[in-house]
Length: 509
Ligand code: NFE
Ligand code: MG
Image (cartoon, helix red, strand yellow):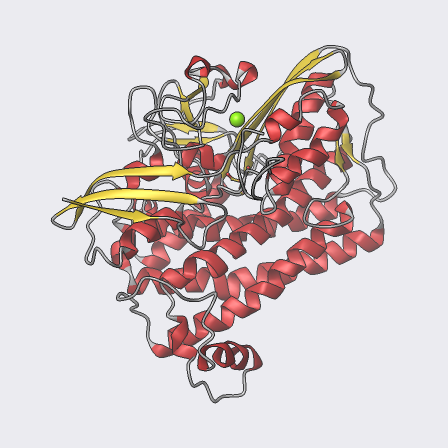
């Protein structure tokens, strides 16, 4: 038996430490520890509830739009406005969230995960005329390989031509992501951390100009997804077919539902082997802290009454993530969960997309529940969103209102349940004396990257790694490929500085 420690796991958002014990090249135990604390829930206490959709975006720079949306929905609920948001406001929230999904998915595939499969050093010595490749080759030829190395070595299977195409798309994807941000900023003022999604709607105006500009942006992004992203996924499925058999997690899938205008991804809980998803009962969500750096007396609470009481020296704890459970059980969240829940719920669009991809790749739908399947589901979802966004943009009504006038209630409680790029996201608020009295966010990576719960049942990423075979313990590519397929974001968190001490020192302050 030996132990492999991967700390930090690179090319993800934020700081994650994964320890695996292996015996004869097979993982016998995995422990997934988030090494940063999120202090924002504490910082929200005592604030004006109207400020939270702005402040909550600081939870993360990658998915700020999801946090703005969930916070605004929680406040709409607490203020009693949830059914009265103007149609333009509902559409704009979906369009802005959609733009952020596209940016995030393209970021994750090209700039974080693809380098597990694409050998970037194939661009070494490139003599051709493509300026993007020249710039990458320039880096590599000068020996300045960061951010591409260090990396694990030994299992890069694409041809030189395929690697070169992958590097080209890596560079092109940077510009596509900029376009996604610019599209969002048309309605949000700036990105990241826009300034218009508010309680009661969106504080902007719809004009014919910003409709035309948004359409032009989204069509360009849609073309990149069709021409590069989906074909690149099929290329990986051809060369790394074992990735469709590896990396199965807990196989219980949760989606809160997202894109309200169309019900594009329906809510549901899909139990292992079930033929259709069950309706969600949000009362069944709890968070365990037995293995987390939080005081034990907050174990098992519903997030509406949840507490964040850091205890950094807690014996046995190994993660700053709590362990969210639905009806006491771990759930995988994210694009693959959304696709499988939607597929089993009978959504015609999702069925067509999934069946089409499975036919092109020559695989069964069940193979989506795998390391490479998570990437395939993310790409398919990007394609669907980019297509539907064109309808949402065209449905906007120039000159019509986008936001309600709101008044802060003295007392209230609300929940905002939506899906972020990485999976189900919930914000819960309690208001007392017109101020935030309690706030809890349960983010997608808390679900997927959770440590063991009060019964010591491992979280989804831990389950996906356990049982994995490793060819070379010095280069555990199989493990990091599976971790990255979940698109973990531990940076849905902030670093809090102590008054005395180093920057990056985490709670308590
Ligand atoms: Ni920081 Fe996030 C997404 C949210 S995930 S990226 O998507 O909410 O933990
Ligand atoms: Mg929380």
